Image 1 (cartoon, helix red, strand yellow):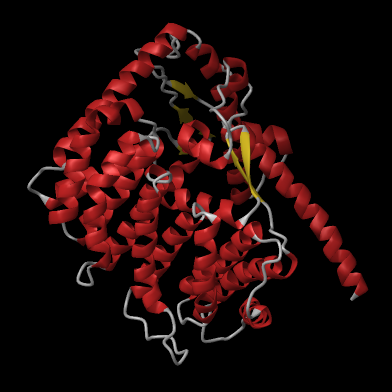
Image 2 (tube, one colour):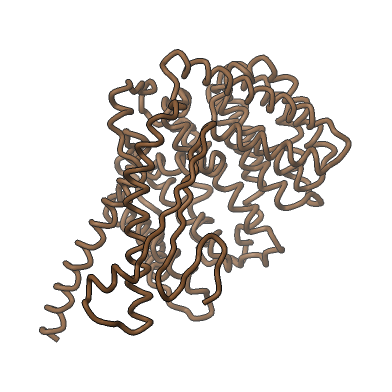
Length: 469
């Protein structure tokens, strides 16, 4: 048999080479000369076919490799100095990492003024990732005017993709600044340009959607106590999605390409701001929008139908909070429409769309009929947050849309978000709690064992069902 690189395999015996490279300055290489044919003879006492010999040989070599890896390798590595620093070293490393992060952020901010659109877009994406995954209050407080000026330039002179990215970064900037005077200053600077893009029919749909979300989030975070800014933002967002309302004959307009996404984004941002309205303003909004939203449930776009349904549930919830005797004008008709959507099985709609739609509208119908919300528990770190109302769901979903995968980190550490959700000050974990945290591999083993147990139990239940049938 031909020799192979790293060892040879002949009829008289097999040679198995396993290099174990250790991190650090010292490198070791262990060559295991294992005669697996003799092992096969000892095990079986008779000749085996070439396929069986190959299987046993592989098992022997693999088990021997595991033994040396877990024992010999561990003994050798014990002589190599550990890379894990002491408490003082950890502080130094954290400080160094913080300085490196700030240097990269400074470079990204400088790149926002580059002549190349590709460079500016890459800088905006880097800032988006950094703002969503870290807390940078001190760093951004000193540079908020510089960042705001750069974002304003991207919004005014950039293309549709750059405008969308700049609007998202601005929403993250307001969340980072904590909703204080600093965020209000930035909102006052960029609100005019966000408004201009949002109502510009010639602007790109992606940019307009991003501006709608940014306008709602920034107003919610930085201008919540300013009633005038709140009313202006509500009116602006209304003017966008009300174009999808039915006309006087009750007919829904034919949507233009991309318009359902824009209307959904504007309606979701508007819904977020509605949660801040006083009772007097709410009564007016309920009277105007509930009948129109009921007609929007017949829209041809599944995402817009879902947004309209969730907005109806939110408005009904707010109406019941300000008036215990609140009743819908056409409650029976609304329930019939919701039942139809909750059991929709039309084949001309995509299967995933039907499944998503049925799930949402079952929840909406259950709340409208029984005033009962399906509670959801969201875990992050060692804490949990309960989404127990349509208001809390709208707030959480709005922050999640902006923060994306970084929402868990901000729920743990961002004082603004924790105050809005009602979690209190950030929880500080001591070293003992962090040390007791199980590893990812241990989680995998636990989940695997739990999966096997569930499978066995379900098989028993399936067998019983088969017997009954």
